[in-house]
Image 1 (spheres, rainbow, N blue to C red):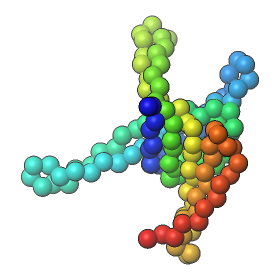
Image 2 (image 1 turned 120 degrees about the vertical axis):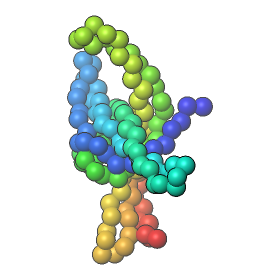
Image 3 (image 1 turned 45 degrees about the horizontal axis):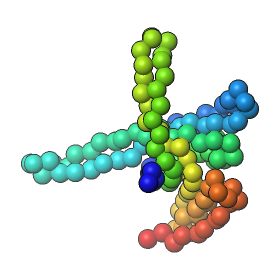
Length: 133
């Protein structure tokens, strides 16, 4: 089974392009935070960055709704690819190929979170309203 879920924040606005065959593809990165205590009990923090690729309708949705700093939950599969750069060196990339995306909108005055879910199985919007804890 090859399935990954990542909850984080968008690092930069997604970019959309078209392939030679005319398919839409969008790519962006998501940052996740890590916290732990070292041996002395000091809180340490770090961030990981995850590359995400969305195709066709999901690519358009991501480009339309996601902005730098947006909270997002992505679900998909991991894939690896290699390419030769202009420096003639092989570069290896691991990416999440998007199957589902969950967009969040915070309503501070109502203390709720609105969530929208988009999927490759069903590109209809599924909206939910969650009560913030």
